[in-house]
Amino acid sequence: MKTKRAYSSTSAPIFRFRSMLLGISLLAVLISGPLLLVWKQVCINSLSLKMEYTNDTLAMCNKKIDSLRLKCEYLSSNERIERIARSSLGLDYPTPEQIVIVRVGERRGFTAAGWTQGVLAFLRKSLFGESG
Image (cartoon, rainbow, N blue to C red; front, side, top):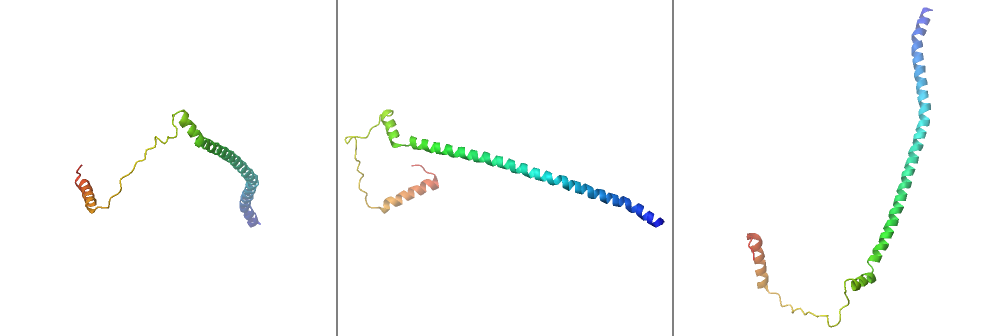
């Protein structure tokens, strides 16, 4: 009988410790489950708010782009530029008397002597640093 009491007295603290550890872990699981669900919901809500803010910012940027395109079309219209040129700068289309035709002399044949002299002059300037 003594052996049973000794055995039961030494196993009782271990059994109590195990049951207490099991109880604490069960309590931790019961508490952490709902906390994790709440944390997940908070993350989802904050991300949805960020997404709405980003969508609003994108919509505002698209409106700004459209207004800038419209303004660019207005500022680059030919009628507006012509009106400013006539009123502010005093410009007008040229009259036939103001048009001068410049004739360029005919191109002569390719000469090897002129070409070689040009290349030699270039090499002399670049290699020896001569000027002129």
